[in-house]
Length: 112
Length: 115
Image (tube, rainbow over all chains, first blue to last red; front, side, top):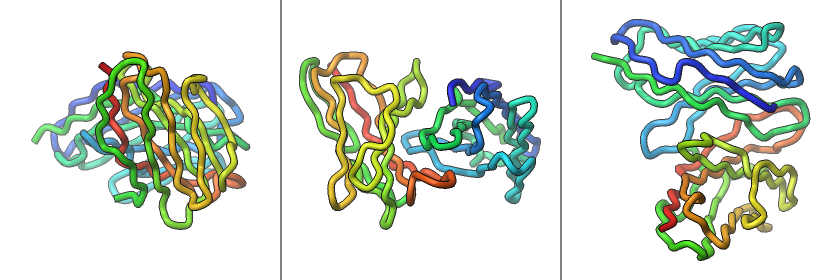
């Protein structure tokens, strides 16, 4: 992968509302799209990932959608809780290449 | 806890010096990745090792080098340090790092401050 754009850079939501973070990528060979959550002073933690043969994946309150034609993928968090507050990073990698190319991150604040 | 360990947690040194960062991958993981996280550049891939051999290189400076030992732990060596090298350095590991894409599990990082 070469370039990943992530928006927004900051996001504030009320507790219980939904949060959506979007990423676009440029490399049509990209086929793996993980999302990581990073809390202050900690390393990135995988929260969900999707591969190019799947359009959507859900895990409890978290879902990811992928549109390969438009080259974008999104993270959806429903029923947000204060402990969801963190920086979220999207990433991608392509066939035969295992290094991850990351977006710049989104700082999510969930207001109680 | 991801199972990936990194030492030291913090490192303060002076310009021109050399430091070594250490990473132990999760038990059974053969592949180790090093990433640098800075405020201006974000998270950037530096280098990957698989079972002792270099597999891929990213935006790694010539002053930086790495290796993976027979017990699979890895070390990242940073030399002739500059102020701009101050950053968080993360190690990640995965089972294979080849074939189908795999989850990369990140360690807690080493925070390097160059004064």
